[in-house]
Image (tube, rainbow, N blue to C red; front, top):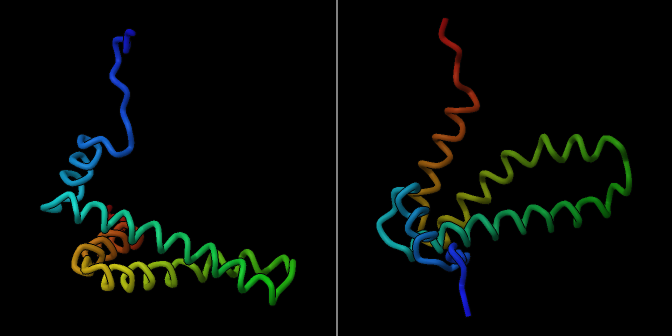
Length: 109
């Protein structure tokens, strides 16, 4: 059997974890997995909350607009909370500072 010229890349490939570890500047593969877990749990919680809250507002047109405006601070607070629970608060605190610095960056002319 011929595998072909290209090696198959899998999500659990060590090089994938190593690339994230280098990009995120963390010192172990376990921290990469914890950071990915925090992002996954935060995203899942936000989706769950939308379904839960939307039950009370039915299909009001303004709810979606309000939700997307309000979810930004909620998501960021939840990211810090999950980061704290998983022992990665320092990473996510720095992540938040960089994120908001980009959002509120002033154009210097």
